[in-house]
Amino acid sequence: FFVLLPTLMMNMSHPYYDVARHGILQVTGDDKYGRKLIIFSSCCMPPSHQLNHHRLLEYLKYTLDQYVESDYTVVYFHYGLRSSNKPSLRWLREAYREFDRKYKKNLKALYVVHPTNFIRIIWNIFKPLISHKFGKKLTYVNYLAELREHLNYDQLIIPPAVLRHDEELRAAQKGGPPPPVKIPPPRPPLPTQQFGVSLQYIREKNNGELIPPVMCQTVSYLKRKGLKTEGIFRRSARVQLIKDIQKLYNQGKPVSFEQYSDVHVPAVILKTFLRELPEPLLTFTLYDQIQDFTKVESSLRASRCKRIVESLPEHNFIVVKYLICFLHMVSQESISNKMSSSNLACVFGVNLVWPPKGTISLGALAPLNIFTELLIEHYHTIFSSRCLPQQNTLITDTTRASILTL
Image (tube, rainbow, N blue to C red; front, side):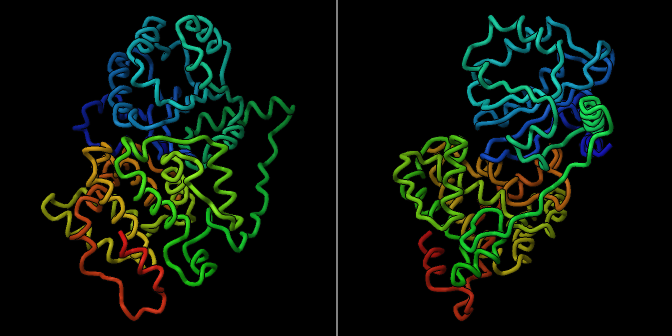
């Protein structure tokens, strides 16, 4: 039910409401490395006589078209595909032909969860048609726990039927009920920690600086080298490289983006930093207000957006202002970089706010993206009245200089 709820609430004017309402497809934000995460759940597919598979294919393309210009990851939950709801081989061939290079190029990983002999047979049938490069993107995942090695597991929208099936598989493997999953106690953060700790923690460990060092350094580099780069923030980077840079930051060691000669590296680091904050920049408190944002008349949205942002704690407001100022600057170069305020909103919306429990569903993305687009598009109006206080002791000269240089 929790999977279907967002789609049940979906506006019936959606062009593919007849398909979307089943919750077969979900977009749940980004994976660990800044790639959009798209989930296909076979168990949500109704019997074939209740679902037009041609419409399903159109809906898949309609959804992917919003994200394929960026790097993305697909998780396919195979459990629940039966003879009653299984598409024909003809449909599968048509689907593979329809998903041309435009869709395959930026697909960075395809995880097939709970594969069966059927999947392997299908793979062998299509193998002569599938490029070796595309085949390397496929990973079979036998148990849900294995996904933790690759993805932010808590971000996944996993249907209850898939969770139950996984428990049954683990119980059968061990000859008894599955043991409870033991979560090791969290390690205390290092004094130099940047990722996975709060803004407050970073400020206390950095002499009161409100703008985290990782943000200052990535933004500074991207201002100098990345403003005109086509597709900035759309591309990912090597997973191990991102892990290594995170480790350097957390250990307080110097990071020089010059040595990587790739502006997409600091771009991914910036998104990763935002996504790993324990509480999002726009805070959990504002999530519901942002979700209700689209109920406001279009002519009043900018002022409503302004009021929402001004209700932020001062620390969050300053960091949000710093980030949005930079994104506004990026959008001003959209003729070169192809990143309009709308495109940037699709990338950054999910990294600015998320619900306190659960994940962002496909239905929740629209208001979030519209809100973020307005922040970027109307930056000067929304952030004009609440200026940096001159006498606030929390704002050091370095922090003020970082903000004023944008």
